[in-house]
Amino acid sequence: MSADPTPAAIGGATSLTRRAFNVTGVVTAMVLLVLVLWKALEVLLLMFAGVLVAVLLCFFSGVVSRCTRLPGGWSLSLVLALLLVGSSAAIWMVGPGVAREVQALMAGMAESIEDLEAMLRAHTFGAYALDTLPQLDVTEAQQVWARIGGVSATVFGALAALLITLFIGVFFAYNPRMYIEGLLRLVPLPRRERACEVLEKLGNTLRWWLVGQLISMVLLWLSTWLVLHLLGVPLAFTLGLLTGLLTFIPYLGPLIAVVPIALVAFLESPALCLMTVGAYFVIQNIESNVIMPIVFEKTVSIPPALSVASQLLMASLLGMLGVLLATPLLAVAMVLARMLYVQDVLGDPLDRPVESPMADD
Image (cartoon, rainbow, N blue to C red; front, side):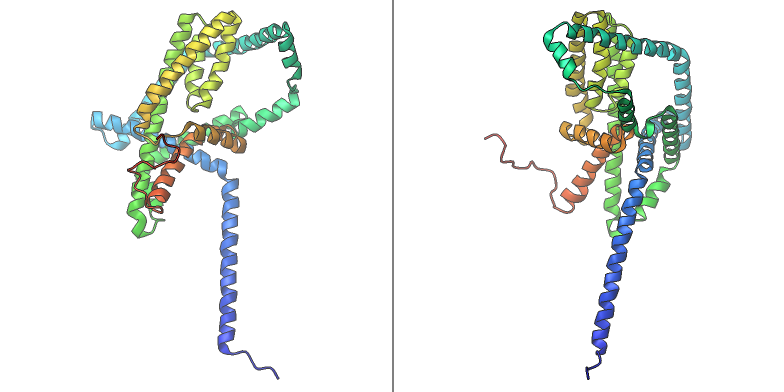
């Protein structure tokens, strides 16, 4: 007869089974959490966009509060009222003219493309290049734009996303302390002070990045408008406004903005097109080498290669919404990596340069 299992053996098997069930439950919960977050990724991005709006509103309301001695809530209400009145007045004053210029811009770009194609086909190499380029039919074009557009592929989707973002931003801005304290409650007590430092650094980074982007957008809009007007390029105001808006997307946005500028200028003459593109890149160099370094003194410096790579990655995953939020998300990731991993885990204080084997002798 076989001996009965001892109580120690039975206890060990029970403990092993319990640990196996615990591990299985933790792994299952993590997989389900990842799936839920992936399905809700667009909603989370809209919430992050709302946080950006709240950070900007809090910055403006803080400026108003310091100038007028008004309480925070009243300052924010005044900022919202000024933004509403100002945007309404701008739409009423320049909206119809911009709409007409946009229609003229689309027609001019189509005509310019036809002229450019005719000029290329007049030469052997140009005709060969056009014939060898892959042709995109209407169905494929619609699929491509649907993929690029993401949640903002339709006007209704874009307006809905914009309204949701604004409402979230206003709610966050009116009572940011409640949300920050709720987030800190999830952090263990010994790490709560460090979490406050990380959140403060993240807030400063996003605040100054947004302010720098707004300054850059306004300056590029005005300077591009002025230069195009002086050169005699049609639709200078709309092209300058488009350039300023696209500048919100660092590096890729200005490269996209030069396309309609070059096409409209080419419609007038090839010489004007060359002069316009040259002047445009002079403006871009001033923005990149003068304005942005000043901004980077207040924020985390984002390497251009990482910024472009993050925009392309987010475009492939989440469309236009991902492209718009790729750079601020990268800035947040870099702050978290520096403070939580490099400083806390690796113990690197980040106050001395790294000795690189590729450094100059």
